[in-house]
Length: 460
Image (cartoon, rainbow, N blue to C red; front, side, top):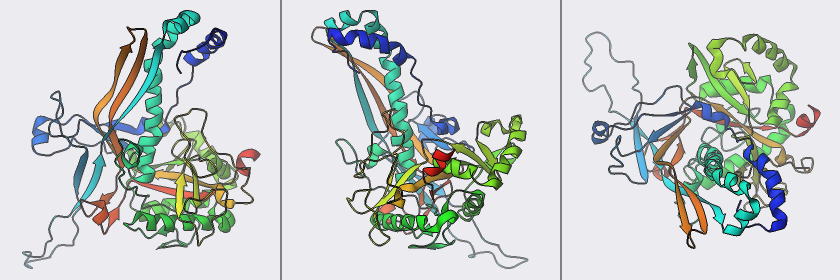
């Protein structure tokens, strides 16, 4: 907020300033599971060895990729390909059977990451007279510019860097087409699950869609499959049975669970709509009593603020990550019903009626409430997540830094924040170029879509 105000507005700003200073910061539920690796050493850089990863981290960030500690960036580049050695397999030979020639070569998969710069500016002072009119509030508000910019960055990073990477493959400033952005083709999640539909993998009508390296083709499969969910009735709505299906699906996709105190757990995030649907299931409500008895067990402190434990799932209700999803026609209005044969696009998060993304750095926007759910059941679809370890990987070439600019003989001043980095979903390709890949593997996360109308929230 700038400070170019009239005399009549100064009093109102003074009244609101105290509330502004006490504004509750946005907290991202996944941030507690993030881990930053140690910096790459000079020896590791020379040998192209990456710092060790935290096996129980949901998000790993590598600081100063391509460089080493305390000596700046060496080499660098805005594209990084990290090879991953595939686990060996085979039963070997027995007895004195000749083993020579029976082995295979090492197989590598690849994770591709990009880094780009993001910057924000805030005008601290736009003249002497507004400062005089506001009095001491001007100084207090100016002092808040740094924390406010940092808060804005964290809100942007939560959705547009981390969650964009999880839903679309890369951060928003990597796949975007605006000035300074890279226009890297987005990649929808290969493990997108539609629980309640018949188990299996096909181009449509099954719980998983056949992956295609052509983004538009795979997105069409997902959008048309999403349109099938409202037809499934209670079978495609959140319940204890859906949780069991998701657990089996996580096993089928070989998701790697967290290991906490010797126990395996998956982190599950759901929207408020999905959570209230779960509460309407008597079997699930009965499980909550069991969870209440375990809440004080310190060995489970990692998930102690989860809403519930169900089987191996620690369930969190969150407004970031879980979100609305909208199947719609190409360049179509989301309020227009998309039939199975004409849905081609799948969008995530609060949208306008014309499927335009809302700015989720705006703290007043959390979700879209649609009164047209009866006319268009596609507006009732919600996406939750099943997370194992290593769901996303980040790189940070330049940590969050501030710069101040003064002009007009120091009568005007502005502060800017800059950050260079990016996140990517941990998809492993069998080719260094994803566009050339014939196979893709993800063993760290699984988004799922359910038919979760608002009536469950209203009834709670």
